[in-house]
Image 1 (cartoon, rainbow, N blue to C red):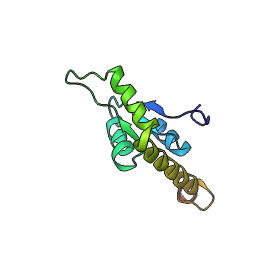
Image 2 (spheres, one colour):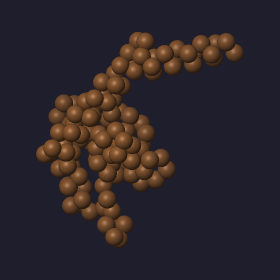
Image 3 (cartoon, rainbow, N blue to C red):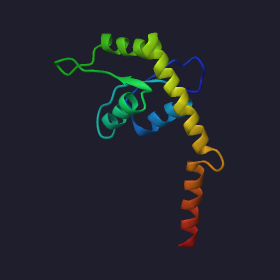
Image 4 (cartoon, helix red, strand yellow):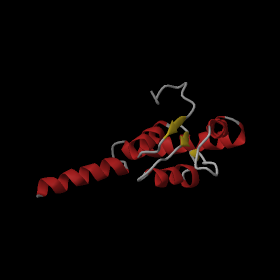
Length: 119
C-alpha cells in the first residue's frame, strides 16, 4: 500500500519494520509511538532524518484528533511539507543505493553469509 503514488504520508506507531518500509519508499511519516523502540524510532524520524513529524500529547497525555490533523498538514503542506518530502526522497535514494549490488547492505549480507559458511 505504501508504494502507491497517491500515498501522501503514513501515520505510524514507528515500529522498526514500518519505519524502514516507509523510508525505503520515500513516504513521509507522522510518528505516533507507543512503547519499546517506537519513541526512539520516532525521534530519528522527526529530529535526525527529518522525514516526518511526531505527534504531541496534551497535558492529560492524550493525542487529540486536532493534533493528528495538524501533524498531517505539517507533512503534506507548506514549506515544512516540502522539506520533509525532499528529505524522504533523499533517504529513499540512500536506501536504494545501499540495497543495490555492491551497496553497503548487499555487501554486509554477502559478508555475513560468507562468515556463516566458514563456521
